[in-house]
Image (cartoon, rainbow, N blue to C red):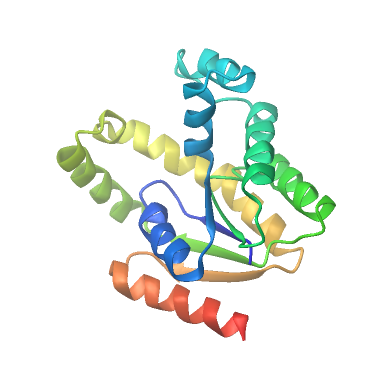
Length: 192
């Protein structure tokens, strides 16, 4: 079972991902983790990625695509993969579907956590205090990230959904346990 989890920054993707991975024995393919691993190992891809991040820039699509593809092939074990943080736009969505299809596989589910802008700003404020995260302290930075999700990632969600992938849309303003019980129930129904 291959799943993509989507949601704006601070929607709770990481929290829900941990539970999904644990209960459904999936491999967690987090774009951020894969990028950090490549950088730590000082691979050719990691060195290129560092050149962008050291300037405060996002790594370009082609570079991220190569890192995700490498991570996908290294972690593919028949267990299934939970993609977290990829794809972020239509170009990346096309790439991911192509890589998986060429491998004789498919995306089985999209999980889309929908959270209001007001709630996301409250969560950013809280996380900035609790975890001392500089990127969450500046509401303009948070609003830019939310806006990019809306303009780039939501079209990617629709692009994949339009290929016929089962989509679970959830009100992410609910309690963590309530959200997960919906996810778990939906995934279990589709396993049987």
